[in-house]
Image (spheres, rainbow over the protein chains, first blue to last red):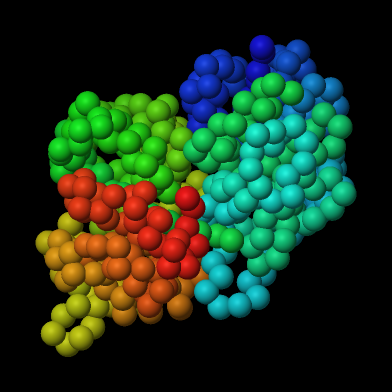
Length: 196
Length: 252
C-alpha cells in the first residue's frame, strides 16, 4: 500500500504521519506531482488559512493535480474545506470538488466560542469511511469555518447549527475533524480509509 | 454537542514527570510518554506538558520528547515552558505538538502573540495566566511561575491577548492551586462570559463536585488538574461518568 500525504504550507502533517505509523502503515510526505499521482491513497491534511493555502497549491499546480486524482483521497480539516467550492475565509475560491460552501460560524447565543475547539459528536454516518463507527461517536474539532450541509454530506455535527463534518463524492472524502487526534474512533476512520 | 474537556497536566523536568508516582498500570510513571499514553487511554480529552526546566540547553531534549509523545499519543496535546520565539514554536509544532502555551514571555513582549497567531494560527496559541486575588479583591497577573507580581488586572490582560490573537486561555488561580478546595469560580466565569475564546480553568480541583462546579457556575470550557490525577485521588473514567450523569456534556 502506497500512501502519500500531500506536503504544503499547512500544519499537522507530522501528526497524520504518526497516526498512520501507529496503525503500522508507512506513508510518504511529498509535493512531487508524479509521486502523488502514483499513490494508492492520498491524504490532503491541513491546519491553516484558506487563501494562503490555495495560493500555495496554485503556484505549484497542485490544485489541478488534486482535483483530477482517481484514487481515494481524504481531505482533513482545512484540506476538506479546500475541496469545497468556495470559502468565506478571505473570500477564497477553492478546488470545487464538492459543491458545498464553507462559511464562518456566527454564534447565535452568548457563550458560544469561535473557533470550535474540542470533542463533538458525528451523526447520520454514511459510506464505508465510517464502517464500525457508532452514531454519536466523538471526534476532535478545531475550526472557525464550516461546510454547509449538502448532497455530499456523509456525517453531520451540530455547532451553532448542523453542518457537514464529512463529505463524499466519487473517490473524494473529506472530514472536518482530526481523525489523527480522535483517539480510537479516529484510528478506525483512518483504517477504514486505508481499507477503501 | 461540544463537550467540556478534562485535561491532565504533566510537569516535566529534565525529561521526567515531576509528580507522576505510584501507578501500578504503567511501568514508569516518571516517563511522560508512558503517563501521557495512560491518561489518553483513560479518556483524557487533551494533555498539557509543561516544561519547568526549559533552559536553552534543554530545549533540544524537549523537542525530542515532544516527538516521542506525538508518535505515541492519539489525542491533542499542548506544550509550554520557556517559549519565546517563532523558532521555539516551529520546532515544537513540527515535532507534533498541537498547541503551545505562552506566559511570561508574552506578557513582557505581547507582540509575540500577534506573530505566533499570524504564523501558526490562533488555534495553536494558548495564553497561560497565573492569577492571584489580592486584598483589594482584584485579580492580578503574576509572572515567572508566580514569583513576580504585576499591577496588571487579569481581565485586562486576557482581553488584550485575545485581541492580539490567542485562541485559548489557561487560567490558574494561585489562591486555589494546591488547596483541593475547588476552582476559582468567579474569575473563571468572568473570563468565560466576556471573552470569545475557550477558558481552561486550573488550580484547586480536588474532587468530582469541583469539576461540576467549574463547568456550571464557573462556565469553563475545560478543566485542568495535575496531582489529583497523578496521585489517583480522582480517576478520569469515574470523573467523566459522574459529570455525564450530572448532565454535563462529556465524551465517554
